[in-house]
Amino acid sequence: MGFGLTQIKIDRPKAEGLHGLSCKGGSGRSVCHHALNDLIWRALSKADIPATKEPSGLLRTDGKRPDGVTLLPWKNGRCATWDVTVTDTMAQSYLHNKTRTSGAAAEAAADKTAKYSPLVQTYVFVPNAVETMGAINSDGLEFLGDLGRRIT
Image (cartoon, rainbow, N blue to C red; front, side, top):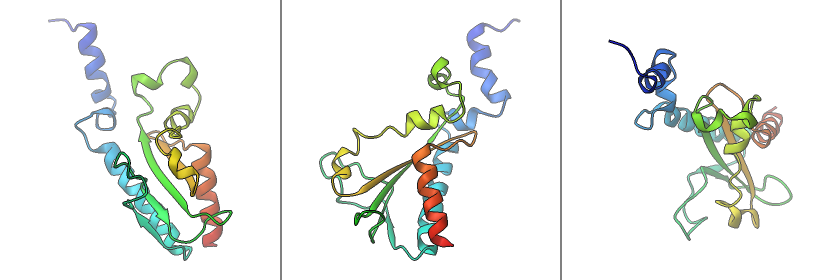
């Protein structure tokens, strides 16, 4: 009994151990998302910068909200808000020619300007997009580097 091309595409991620990160029913990316969000919140606490996770009331029009907000100014007298996104590096949507470089999927996922445009007026918005293979978007790296310096 032979395998069709469709079955090979479906079975291949499972055989390579990637299914848990790409499956819509799986919890792999969700666990990573919550862990990274908690890591940022705890690091802010270590730097003596109080913050709130999943603040309500910042974006009332559609009910969406960032993953966190600092309660003290972060930069230029404005508090920082952050949003964590975990992308599957091996997802078919990121495998086209433009995203064959390391971090390209994270940079694409970090483009949330339309979703959070109302926040940019009063907050420093920092998208933190991380690929399942480890790459982080440039704004996220800058934010985490700043945070590390404030801890030390």
